Image (tube, rainbow, N blue to C red):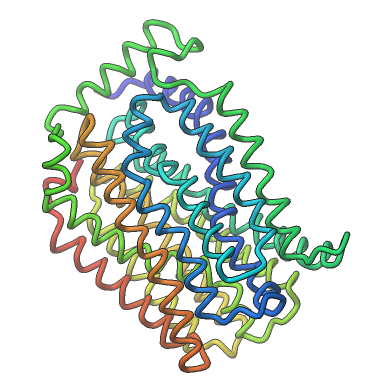
Amino acid sequence: MHDPSHDALYRRVSWRLMPLLFLCFVAAYLDRVNVGFARLQMLADLRFSDTVYGVGAGMFFIGYFLFEVPSNLLMTRAGARLWIARIMISWGLISSAMMFTTSVTSFYVLRFLLGAAEAGFFPGIILYLTYWYPAQRRARMVAVFMSGVAVAGVVGGPLSGWILQAFDGAHGWSGWQWLFLLEGIPSVLLGLWTLFYLDDGIRDASWLSDADKRVLEDAIARDRVGQQHLPLVQVFASGTVWLLALVYFLFVMGLYGVSFWLPQLIRNSGVTDVLHIGLLTAIPYGVAAVVMVAAARHSDRSGERRWHAAGAGLAGALGLVVATACSNDTAIALAALSVATAGILSTFPIFWSLPTAMLGGAAAAAGIAMINSLGNLAGFVSPYLVGAIKDATGNTASGIYLLAASLVAGAVLVVTGVPRAAAAR
């Protein structure tokens, strides 16, 4: 039976946890993709090709891949508060150090180190949310958390464009150097805040009464019935985990196509001023922030996951195709990019309802990290392929069409490959 008092309790929990986690993801994603704006200046300053940029943008995900699973397993030992704070402080410092890039080698090394530092943050938060929310409440909370991606686009686009323009040449530094320095500082400050504010779990929350803790713990205990608590070796050999990793890889291909190339796609439509480009990138992300939360809420209420994720992926693919085909018309291209961004981002909170409902205990920590690390290898493949195709053909169209095809493949696979019973929690 539905108890309204439980809704009130979960609202208290959400207001305590989600603003900080949301801000952390805004900072994380901004530090991850601001290289897309830095590209508008640094390629000319450092004489990098688009292929070099694509490899450098993607090197982040090599470090991320190698350290993801160990980082998430360490969080279960060190505790969420200490480990998430460590991640944020280290990545903020390395992100600011990107301003000292002077060569191809230093670009690659710093991007690799940034990925290694951030490894474990996203799957760590996904795992952390399973400590607090049962499956029927989780997709909307993941959506609130992941809307940080959209807000990073809304805030980060205009902010990055303004920094590039306003600070270029100040104290002898280029605008892209100031961009890395100034956008890395908030991550360090948020990491310090996390250290003093976040609780490791329900038992550690001094702001909850014992009765409140029992309600939350009982809901989590009921939710864990039917979850698989596999040994780590079996997690890594699980066909379901590998299938989910492949689906995630295909969706992430589209995500980073937008993240790393959206400024260039807007420039291709005829907008040349970097500040105007930054302002226009806020529009697709603003639309996405609203749509992804609404889609996740509807998925939670209906209990259906597969078609929600597939529909969002197909909408993302359609948006990319139209935006590329109509690249000479700024209005049409921007509208299509808004559809693409909203569709692509909406796939992720719904997708993460699948492994978190199926896996529990150490299997959840390892499985979530494995899916995320393998899937995020697309963050290397995607910008590399688009950059290489652009160097070979002189335009980004073929590369973007490839990303659209990847989204379609992910949509088909999530419907045909994921068992209906596993997707209905």
